[in-house]
Image 1 (tube, rainbow, N blue to C red):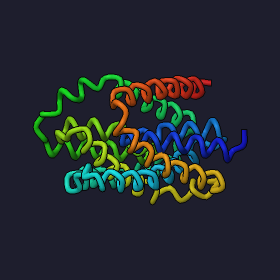
Image 2: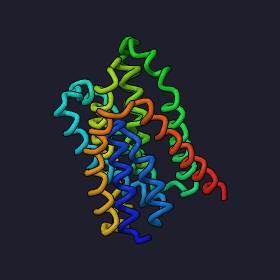
Image 3: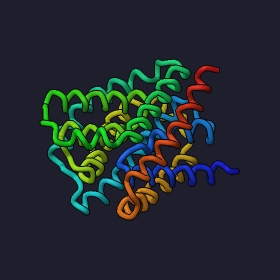
Image 4: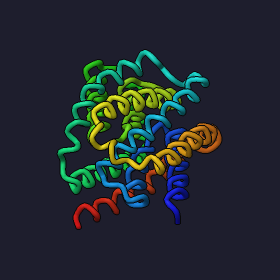
Length: 249
């Protein structure tokens, strides 16, 4: 199968995840870039930031039109992660590839577990907002974005629900604001790894992801959120297991 077809197919799935779930696109983008399209882990995490930034901004616009974005709270949450994202992005190029692969697999597994246990998140929705906790969570998400090239939406959504007591639709929409800000900050420090990116692959990948984000937004309105989360979580567990095995070889 040609690289173009693989890039278009993978991009559509990534966009669908971001549009429907408000996150999770990058934890699919990096494995697709590494194992389907032959990128190194470092180049894949940088490319994923480019793809996720463009796709998240598109999905953010779609959700904003529906009134699902809380701009002030989202901006404060995202601001706490900007410096950690930049610092971790600069440090990522100095880490060995197997370590990055194993860390990414661990994050994917964590995301899957969280998505398979939605009841715990919903039960905590009425927890009081603690500014220090919100800032700490935002900083942690920023560092994760910079280090592994993930937007952090799969962690931002439950964090916005539990820490800031957002209802689910607002959490999904607002998480896209957080993802966009963190990804842009991390990209600013990734000049060295951006030089080797194959734009003939990344361009179609990003275009398909942007279109997929619109479809994901429509899908979220028609399909049960629980069904979407479970299907995505199963796929993530498979990805995590494969990447752990690869890191140990």
